[in-house]
Image (cartoon, rainbow, N blue to C red; front, side, top):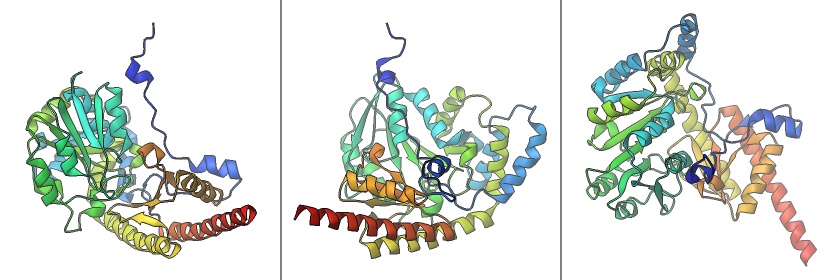
Length: 375
């Protein structure tokens, strides 16, 4: 008799992108750049790094469980501390949401082409997840609302969505919300909100609050703290109070909390990050257009490219890796012909564009040679 529940045995593990060291070793390269995981190409906030150095002298002391970070976030976003939670990345808080609110017979709903971590968390809990296809690569909010049934407990929405980079508007969300029962919890994953917040069409959820909505955000992207796993969320105080019962008592770590507090104060670094991303997005999308590569307009720090087939997408990923540029195939996200490219630094984007030109020329040559061989 197996000790492993069948839904765990059948679970497909999350597959992270290839590491720079693996690609460097495999192809004997001197230089490899990773543009696959939507990391900040500028590194981490200098103020956050200094805060970590100061905290190293107190590693013998248990952390506060995020209490001081919660106070700072409450002040930053003009809410009560009772409305704030901090944890090990936004995904860590998402896992606690599953543990806190889901019962065995409950079901969840999410877009089909979205952050794969939510689906894996739901499957690890043994609940049924209804995956609703996007429409023209945008989350189909009316279809998600229509999928709600008496067993629905949680709906997951990422805005901007990962890996498509598309957003939905406040008007679209309000129309969707009118069809959602109060008993259904909505997770609004705003991991990339900093990149979209200046777009007048983007609905920052801190400007509208509902009792059954939990907003999740992270320090991993714009603040460059992916390696520390630090995230936060906002919700009605009753939801937060119950999440705090389930959350590990000393999560997040002292180093992560100190870095998060300092990163919030580093407005100059955030401004530089957003300027670099906007400039890089123009550079990369212009190159894609010139090469005739289909892509989805993005409001995040990445762009999703679309290829004629899965084989061609895999060929592009492999050819780019051989040139020292790691990009992300999207088969695990349900988009086998898609490849996601993170926007890098100015220098990284130049290398990316050059490698793309070489790759496209190589693939066109092979295609032409194949046509000649068949004629």
